[in-house]
Length: 154
Length: 424
Image 1 (cartoon, rainbow over the protein chains, first blue to last red):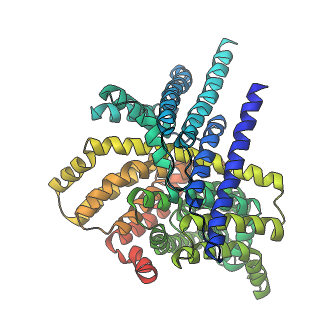
Image 2: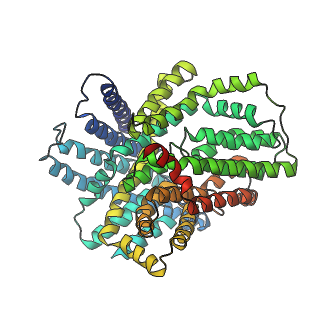
Image 3: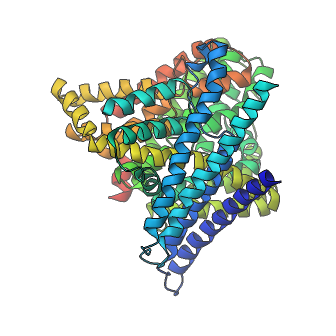
């Protein structure tokens, strides 16, 4: 239930941010070719939508294994070592994103005191995207580790 | 301390960590060992992707996927078949010609090998072409994609160097065409020697119908390029215009896109882009560490201490990039090496735009260089033959690619003629 809800939130977040990105860039173009003045916030808003789209999609990319790796040496490893690696790789990757998640909270705290130049948006909100990116990747890595452990036991 | 960064990165890479995570772990180890505040990790990740021109990456990927979903690949192949099918080895030429046209839409070599190969390799097998040759033609022709505009590697190179995306797009056009023509000549020569089949000549009406059928998708490339070169749009705006255009064509002209399929395409494109942006973010931190340790300066001094001859320096860089491009993903290799090598190239008076083309060309040639070029792997898995067979059959095409690389390296005109003509 929770798993489905997380997946759905990430998908909706990605799609809303994507449509938002398209809409703000289009608005920028349309305003340029009409007598309407281009709002000063469009570039900043489009960057924010883009970063949020990437942050929501980063976890989904983890879930669907979109991250590229180098298989050149791996194929030559003995099968027991490959088994070990299938556990070590997600665990160490998890450590990386746990660090990133924890310190992105610190970044959000720092950002709370700042405002973005054209929208006047609290930068804590902008930096929240990094927390979403880190936690969503952590979530899918943890699911993978749990699944691998379960498979190993059975 | 820098050895920790390099060692962790290389070990993680060899152990098959995702390249982005290998970079991240290497940086994390360095930051921990050096006692730098860890807030730098999310901070550099954020600043690495908070760059306006990078917004064009998901834009072009979405536009390409939308067009492809609208049945574009089949239409382009059909059109090229009308144009080139009557020549000896017609399907091999169609494979290359279609890749050149498809290049204006896709922008990545691996997606080109996969989408073109799944149609062309079985078709060539059915007509009696040698399987190794069919896979090799598919793999080689797909390298044209990332150099002909719009090109994702060129956008990344522009982000790293501050060069104009429009100029880089134009700079890649002539080398891309040269590579395409070179591959066409090689495929024709081999086909003639092996007496591969040819189709009956298409009538003018068939060619025109084929053109009308693909016109809307080919127009997209024109709109993107004209918009950027003419100063009408920024590259980011051009990519979003391409998305809106692809949505309209896919929905109203090709009638293949439903609301649901659009959401699926958007999600897939964003996942691909996110995997690249995580890489870009960690590479930003990696680059920051290299700069604080003055590594680009040290490497530059080392190379320039060995020689200051421009051509020897370029030869060394070419060799390094081809080797790296053979086993590393193009964008990852570009993110790590381009800023360092650009410094060396600038020191021996190489034009930065010319150098960007050389770097991208090297890395994409690496995709078809044995023993581990990624496009060779993709093509061999579609054709269900060994990578050795594809590599052997692909040798003439690799030689053509290397010849084009030599020409592009020695004669900056190939890279600079169009940017100088249209954007000075």
